[in-house]
Image (cartoon, rainbow, N blue to C red; front, side, top):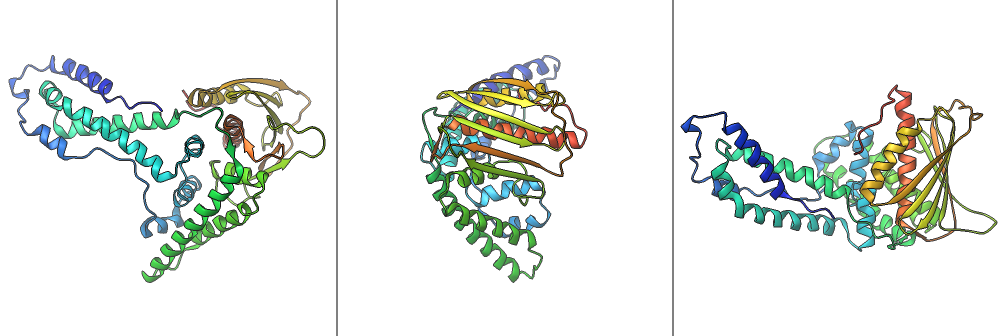
Length: 374
């Protein structure tokens, strides 16, 4: 896990402020706040906490967009925001509360380190008032925390047990339904009757619990991937379909995934993932010549860097592949019948589906440039 380096931030801030001060010769700008250290120490720095589902938060479900509903669904189920965080937690047997406490402890250590430097920094940062200092520190903490979350260490040999994931989805799903029902009850007491989206969320989670109870590896993998795709929880069959199938006949190999993605704008794309070593995955992408291969390459390279994953992506272009009109995108994963999956195969499969569908959606609205994944 990446360290949150406040020392570097303060050094940079000090350098910038010195440059500003050289342009200001007024003696009145000198440091004259003897209680500044106590003021900062009295104000705690931000902690990473899991917000408890509250009635007001739940009532906002009626106006949330798709991506916000996805965040809400994972929050109410006690699941992390991103799939790499989920893998990190599962490999270490942690729950969401323990995961948050880990980062809170790290931030507390940084605050202690900062306190030792406060007197010196505040004395030298002339004209740098307490409020501005706090704002800059909070911004730096947030930036470095986000970087730390992107670069969590994944254990190559820490296999993901889909049977355990099935149990987790059942337990967390039941807890989530109880929270939503409690919130709807409180909302009814307040005279609020329009709770349609909350009811839909409860139905969706309840259906997921029922599927997870079957303890089927393919269905469990589907639930997990859908949970971490950006359009969740849209109804299946409306904007996106995902199917996970187990191989029938022939020799099974749990180191190979075949993903078939039918896009709206680029026809069918077939991606074969080969696990060469515990953290090395080779991707062979078969697509039409109109598919923006460079954009997909840049996106996958960004994930590769964050996951410390050794991947090689090659493209096989079929010029005779003519895109056919599709009402919605869909993906199919073909895998061996196994209850354990390598974490990098899981992350790679998720990345491929997410980025291909995202590129396809962007093309539908005229967006062709890739976002910055550096």
